[in-house]
Image (cartoon, rainbow, N blue to C red; front, side, top):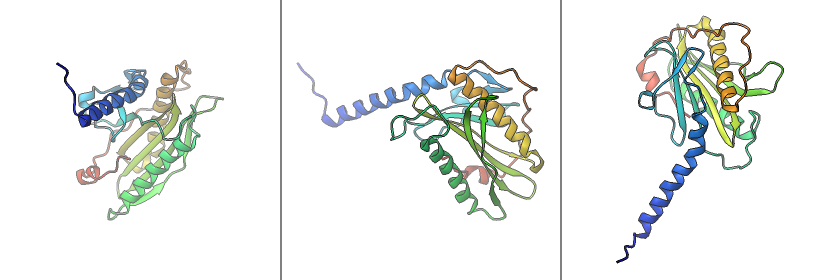
Length: 223
C-alpha cells in the first residue's frame, strides 16, 4: 500500500529541510570561533540571548553573569549573490546603516535621552586591509551612556556582525571601543584562519556594566 502525503505537508517538509540546509554554512562558520576571546567566554546556547529572527549567533560574556556581553551573529545570505570577503560591500554598509537608523528611531521615543553617532571606525591588522567596519551609536543620559557598537564584514558569502550593546560611564568611551575592536579583530582572524598577531599590549579589560532601566532594555531594537 502506498501512502501519499498531502501537498501542503510536502511543501512544509521541503521548506523545513531547505531552512536547515541554509543554516548549515552559517553554523559551520560560527563553530570556528574559539571558546574564549580576551577574557570573554562563549555562553552555552541555552544561556544565550535569542538572536534576531533569521540569524545564528554565539554570545560571549566577561566578568560573570552580570558582565558585558558581545554577540557574533551570521545573517542569512543576502539577496544579491557574490558577497565579497570584505567589510566594504554595499550589503555590509546597508547592515550598519540599518542598525544606526533603528537606534536613532528608538531614541526619538525616549524622554531626556539624546542620541549621537560617534565616528565610524574600522578594525584591521597592522599594515593590512580592514577586517571589520563599525558604527558607534550612543544614547546619552545624565550619568550613563547606552552604547551600541556594531561591526560587520562579508565572509564566505555571509554577513558576519560583532555587536556590543552596553551601559557605561561617560568617561569610558575609548575603553569600550578598544574592547570591541580587540575582540572583533580576534574573532574575524579566527573565522578567516589567520594567525594571531603578537599583542602590542595586554587586551583592554571591559568596564563593569552600568545598570540601565529595565524598560529601556526591553524596548531596545535588535536590528
